[in-house]
Length: 306
Image: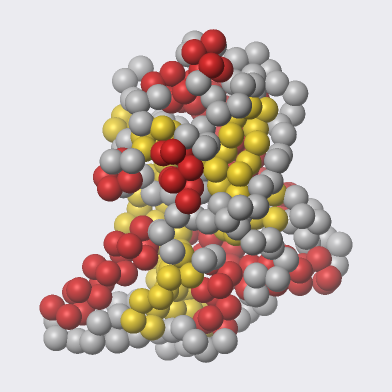
């Protein structure tokens, strides 16, 4: 078990149940939307990127601070611990990027669809929320790709759900996600084309809301990205199961405002330095999400010329 998850499970059943309840019943987490989690990184280090100087600092939302829009109901990427701290592997990653740029990290917790809104409107410098880098989203922001992941089905442990034959069933995903806006509608259209009943598709505010609906018998299955699905199943006390393998592997992107070349270059340099000194694979390993590791970071799905 990764050390960061062990911290909240070693104290016995109460903590373990609270963590599971946060995920399954959304009982330990806070609401999103206007809530804010101000998390500061360790003392600033010397900027590692050639572009991480005055130009970057002058174009931040708050001088000396990297403002990060995130979705705090998505374990193990970003979520609230039982004692109310914002934790997760993407939280650790954003904090380390900020540290290497000589900045503090401040997190703004918003609903998943609002992550891009905040970056696009200038309320946040970057957005990190296990977000697939897609052509549609590239119309609104630029992406620095830092990880790869796919889509997994989740259902109840005793369900006969077949991921190859979901037509006519009630399924769901997080509102604003690529799974809800693209993946499930494509499957539904394929069902109709084959003369079968379409999917009944429902959007949920969080993965916990979707898994709660599965456990409560109100939903046949849900889809989520691989690390979230794996965490949900592991924290369900045997009530959930993952069905099949991950499909449609895609890059995750850190969202940056369109054409903010200086900040994008600085983030790329920080990430490259994390690969060079081994801290990036170490971070992923601590959280048990090393399967999506990439050694080369792309911009908008394209390899960056060195």
